[in-house]
Image (tube, rainbow, N blue to C red; front, side, top):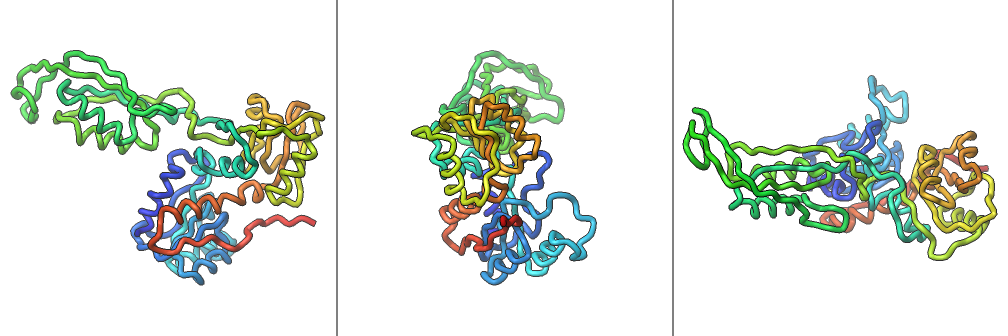
Amino acid sequence: MKVKEVIKLLEELSPLAYSESFDNTGLLVGDANETVSGILVTLDTLENVVDEAIKNKCNLIVSFHPIIFSGLKKITGKTYVERVVQKAIKHDIAIFSNHTALDNSWNGVNAMISEKLGLVNRNLLIPQNETIKKLITYIPSKDAENVRNTLFKAGGGTIGNYENCSFNVEGKGSFKGNEDSNPVKGKKGEIIFEAETQIGITFAKHLQSNILKALFEAHPYEEVAYEITTLENQNQYFGMGMIGEFEKAMDEIAFLEFLKKTMKTDCIRHSQLLKKSINKVAVLGGSGSFAIEAAKKAGADAFVSADFKYHDFFKAENTVLLADIGHYESEQYTKELLHAFLKKKITTFAVLLSQINTNPISYL
């Protein structure tokens, strides 16, 4: 199996098309055509993690956080980032990161936190916008069923819990081929009228190349007429954060103690206690202050995230309990998620879970 084939598998879990614009996801170091001898899964790629990969004969590191976040103008070994890249290149080790693509995945970072906390009735906290596309195309009526089914197989026509969704309108199309044309029906220079079906389907944006490939392969015409538009509908399967409920509410102190134990953190910074039960909880792995208003709007009793600044805690405004459990702590189970996913998909070589704690913060 090659590096690019492993990446294709990982995109089933977290398509890179849903990465945030500020992020740097994908293959960061290495050759996509290199044959994989072993995979090491980690939260961060540090020098000792590369050493761990070398020791275990793993030539692909799957790292949640990208080691290269902004452009490198020099690679001289002066910074930890440069030293990691140098060592990885020297030992032919590829590094891949899916970061915010996994943050935005329905089965990603926030689903893992929700599972650990035992939250049920889950929904996305901030669904992504402009991620649903619509295809309109025109097909000879006798070929419409075949083309429609081909588009369905490519992933088109899925809306929420429903599949094979389409809208079909019967009509009459016209065309006239020029001297360089090779019309399937009629002759060059002749106006042809054909009974056609207009088919409309929606699809997730990361499937666009698959949808178009399927359309061109199944459509009988030499030139395929189609249009693609971006819809404003929110995507219920891709977005930041998650909100769910406990099966049984608990008081605030019990909730904070449960949170501390479950998320294995030495410190929880929290806003003022509200003297009410905690039932509905919003979570967002990593830096989540931008989602405080979304958590309040969603009616969360508590919002669990990390990296809140001093003034962020004022935003609670006595309506929600804000709990900062630490950046590493909020994402620590992510590498277990990636490891379990790859182990299930790959059985021909080793997929190892890094044993190195990469948390840069210590508590006294």
